[in-house]
Image (cartoon, rainbow, N blue to C red; front, side, top):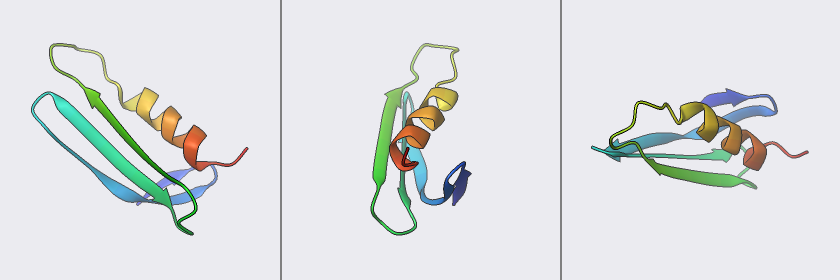
Length: 61
């Protein structure tokens, strides 16, 4: 579970060396998003961008 500005979402993350995946959905099941990215050979943290994408997808405007 995680909290977004619009409420609680449910899901989990995972990955293998060089790859990350997170998949979450709204509690009512009407919205779902999966984000996958490579983090091989970079020092940049993509988590803030993934969170922003999840917020845009899961929080109705």
